[in-house]
Amino acid sequence: MEKIHVKVDWCEKNYAAVTECEVLNGLVTVTNKTYEGLMKDLAEAVRFHVEGCTEDGDAMPEWLAAGDYEFDVELGTSALLRKCEQFTSLAAISRASGISQQQLSHYANGLREPRQEQRRRIVEGIHRIGKECLAIM
Image (cartoon, rainbow, N blue to C red):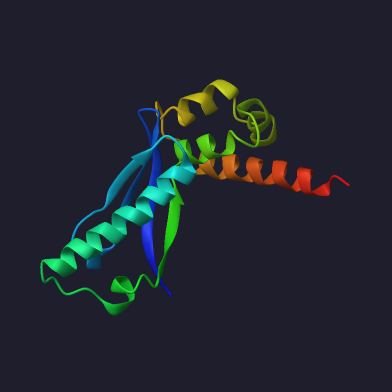
């Protein structure tokens, strides 16, 4: 199964996704208020784009025309924090990562972009919370 790389971030109170796949003959971009809705809309938009290209006579790889692909999603830090909101709070992520809640709020709202080291700490903090939840008997 082929993979279509997708970058997802948080923008203006919405998730936003952009495909990075040369064979799509252009970018496919979608937005939605929820992550689940975004992924559903993205699948529909890619299908619609491929159908349109095929109808226009553009050559499409068989795997793309047949829908034999999956999305390889790369979450930006703001989208990552927003996606985790349904499971935990910024306060909990702050305690687990050692990054202030105010700074995490800036990242979640897209006001600031963390350095690579800060992002690593955020991801490790979220993983730590998940491991603690899994350890509960």
